[in-house]
Amino acid sequence: MWSPGRPAPWADLPPEVLRPGPDRVREVLPSGRRGRPSPVEDEGGTPSAVLVPLYEGADGLEVVLTRRDWNLRTHRGEVSFPGGRADPGEDLTTTALREALEEVALDPARVEPLGELDHLTTVTRRAYIVPVVGLLAGRPDLHPNDGEVDAVLHVPLAELLRPEVFREERWGDEVNGRPVYFFELVGDTVWGATAAMLRQLLCRLTGADPGGDEENDPARGAPSGFRLTPDQERSVF
Image (cartoon, rainbow, N blue to C red):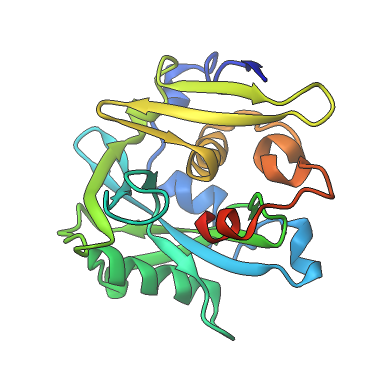
């Protein structure tokens, strides 16, 4: 079951706030900012981290995304941020930088690590994702890791902020339903956890109202007894 959701939170904002620059990023996501934790963190949930790389291009800020390789066993061809599971005892900023180096050859020395977005619960309810925002001095020269990454995508925030690009759907019934977000780019659809992180980022940069806990972290509202099969669990980021 599904139904149409709400319009983009920034749909009615004035044009001047839809062109954030690097200073705005540093203002709303200062270095050391800790994101609101997922409820599974106190339950021993497994941490992952992603890097949200931003740089100023010809049309304003751009974000680096990846398209996963089409030969991967799971999530093939999906658009995501570079990232993955943390090694035992690893700081999550280090995880994000390490994964970006491994996946797209982004030199950590070129990244100014800033704060975290709020953490996202995965659908297993036993894992969570920490998005770490990083600023780059300019457009990076990146090289996708064969077998993991099909392509590197450089997407202007101005494109993501177009009202017709964003879509929200409500999946499930009135009791257990949750919002699912989509960004329809040319040739690619960004959805799920990556779209939720992009929505949160854009709300912070524009000052749009992101809504409550369920809007920012849709999977935290899943039924408490929800579990996936072992095969499904292995397919989750």
